[in-house]
Length: 198
Image 1 (cartoon, rainbow, N blue to C red):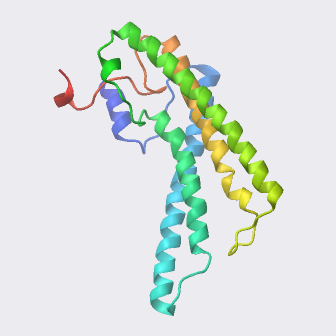
Image 2 (cartoon, rainbow, N blue to C red; image 1 turned 30 degrees about the vertical axis):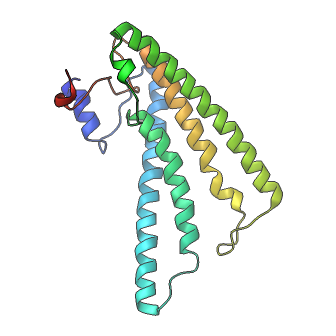
Image 3 (cartoon, helix red, strand yellow; image 1 turned 90 degrees about the vertical axis):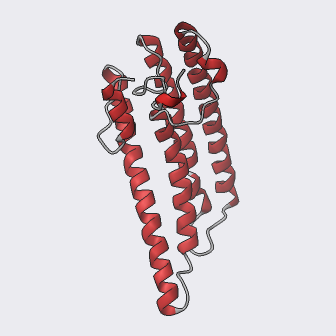
């Protein structure tokens, strides 16, 4: 892995630069910015909500009745926004014993197939998540403490699956249009830890 790519992997706080040309690169970078804002806001709001609730319990003897529901909403947001983030930075768990034993050409073909298949699965899950939201909407259930309809908190699920599906599709495009084997649009295949390499 080159020094530039290794720095990008180690420092995720820096501005993300897509490895794709033209409009696809613009889409990739735009989604990355949206994800970064969603994840940062979600984690910060959860920390603030939890700390405030702990202080309220200590000072007033009881916490805020809505705190648990807010954290539930934020966990859903962080989980499904994090799917795309992990795909973009090549951070998903991989079982690569067979894959690592293949030649570079076969790894490239396999990576394209894996990325396209994973993209299709993410869009399939997005479709079914949307159906689940429609079911919740038709039932009219509400959150007991906050008082708004429960289907609102699950909007992040199809959005997260769609963003992840787009990211895997872009990974396939990157592998088709580039020389190296890429785990995502900006992460070359390889190991950072030289002790694990033969």
